[in-house]
Image (tube, rainbow over all chains, first blue to last red; front, top):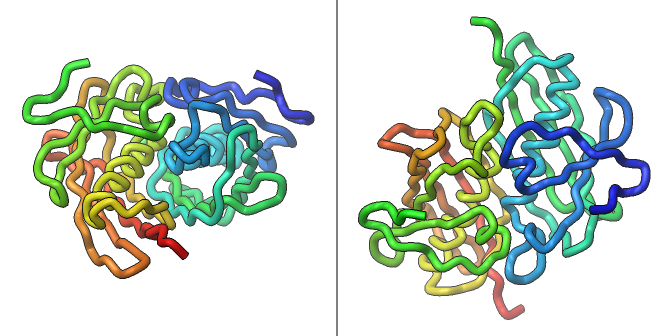
Length: 134
Length: 134
């Protein structure tokens, strides 16, 4: 496993993310970019990255971003809307820089454009519920 | 790996589905129910099934259903809208019976309610593009 130039490895805690990872990140807290490299595990039978892996990476990267946006408040995914636009292939680096759309006391609204070499693969819009003390 | 009562194992072709599977199915073509058993690989650090695994199972099960609905026309996921309602835990059997909403010459509209022991975990609405000869 080679770490992409400029990136460091993201510390993952969820067994499913560790199982399909690694994930990489670069940049400052609140404006990080995340990435994964498409390998033999991640593809469909046509050699294109599987939609499930794209959505798993989305959930992982957006979860990390929400953690940073809220200064470490635990949260859960409420919904996710994904548009599949183009496919990445074996060896491609898939990147996203999640954007904070709105944060309320209980909710975080996020979006992200997923790209490889500047080509858009998927766009995501997602709402996360912050887990308060109540 | 124990096959749930009444189910048989689904033949998977995509490496990513094989990596996170197995998947099971029961019923007749066009009205099959699909399932997977939550194991140690599939969870987050709280022992709840990871959203990425739910979405991967959704993509796999709906893809199989579209294959049946269209009598074996290859297709790709165009979009997926997921509402996360409740969590499954280690050992739970997650089930879905994808429903055909509409089929046109180029598109298939599908929805599905994902449950465990009758409790709703996630609802999905998804559009698939049929890959024609053009």
